Image (cartoon, rainbow, N blue to C red; front, top):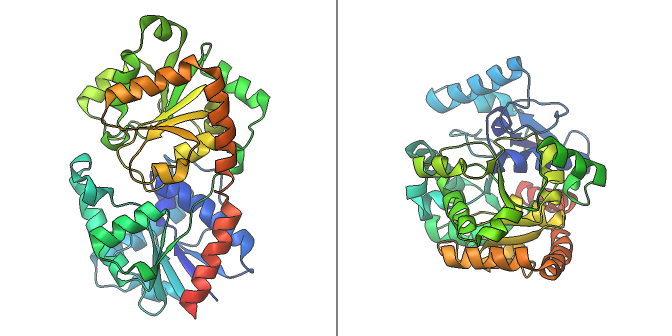
Length: 365
């Protein structure tokens, strides 16, 4: 069996998709027999994950993006020429004209562009509409949650029999980060008070403005003792959100190596997103032993289970109340932290890789 995986998202700035593809590919290579997994463009050992830059050198990045452009915007069958003897081609998000001989598979991440189009740029909407056509043609797809599968069936009219739910994993770094690393990030970012943390791209879907306003609605005495800390690239934040960021500790993009110890250093992790296909930050916070408050919509209840306080993300009152409960109760924080660690064990990359290879074997026949 020979599997060819579209690795182009590793060449561009990306958050969730890049995180998924980076770890998934690494564990597929470790699990599958030698020579089973190839990538387009060809990529050797991957450097440490960086969301804001390419995972390949300048030459491979230029060649990979150039090949993608020729395939997407000209009649040249670039991927047909490069696919070789592959049995399966797995698409990520950017390919419009996959090779015709191998069987086609793809990943379903989320349906947010269909369910909440007002939160996305026109470029995002166009890209997802194009990708949906590829999903309809695929011999089989992997959905990263049951919620994403159900939404894809409803929005795209896909056959549920052709969709396999395979949960992604959580990077090992999030499970019990070393104490010295936690202290290092505290010192590096001057985090002297207990803090509520949110991690993610600053974009409308993440509901950052609502979180800042909910924190501001807490009693002054609590805000004097605690601080709200946000980490993540600026994305396409609204003018209102950009203005509100000035009232909290906004760290911007931080190195990947700092995210796990920063998460473990937080007393509370808040993630009131309006929609998630999986919700990596929530799963990572549970693994790191941080008490979580998150939304009661999309995949988030499925991922968090009983290990988080669930709130209506459009209700500032509910979010403020949940924050206050956690900030006032060390016992509740400890209870949710323990539940979260156990819950996070459901999401391991080796399990994901084994299930994915079984899926590919069935597709390849």
